[in-house]
Image 1 (cartoon, rainbow, N blue to C red):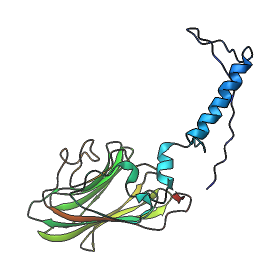
Image 2: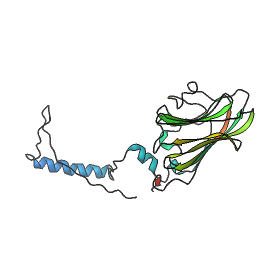
Image 3: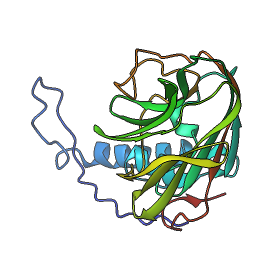
Image 4: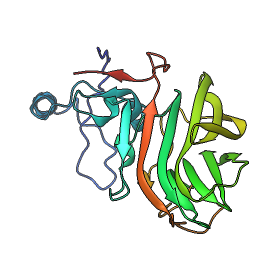
Length: 243
């Protein structure tokens, strides 16, 4: 990966007056050249180059070092873990992926299985009123998928499968123990960043992804583990890696 930048520097020295509106570069070329040399020296000392003027969300989603967890395609998450910061969550952007939550249910159990993001954008898989639900909040536009069959007590694998159909768009579907459950919902997805608050299992803490359940909405059943699997159908230009 190569960076190409053109640096346009207009040398300026401001006086020490209150308004700092007088350019003294022409009057003090000695000071000017000293400051320019110091600037280049400090950029080398602190590794400023290569300069990168792309926004944070794009850089966080596209470029990763060899040690970055974002180079993984498979994640296994456990309920005892703390919040995963937004900068190292699974890269679900503009690709197919699936979430499989292995749970144990009793009669009446409900709550959030996995949530990522916040009120500005995110997605959440949860159980409510005895059925599986998924919501994708794309910058305030909310897409919802509802399970059709009541969930019986016992051990289950509750799944959401997202299939990419085009740039930043796809179809979300639910499944219970490998069997389709409910319809499919077309949705438009985030390009680089879904939300700032990171990823949590078993609740939707802080700013909520969805308005459709009580604040936090902790899961009352048992989560054994949650698997997130990322497909390889992502375009090459979307997620690049470098060493």
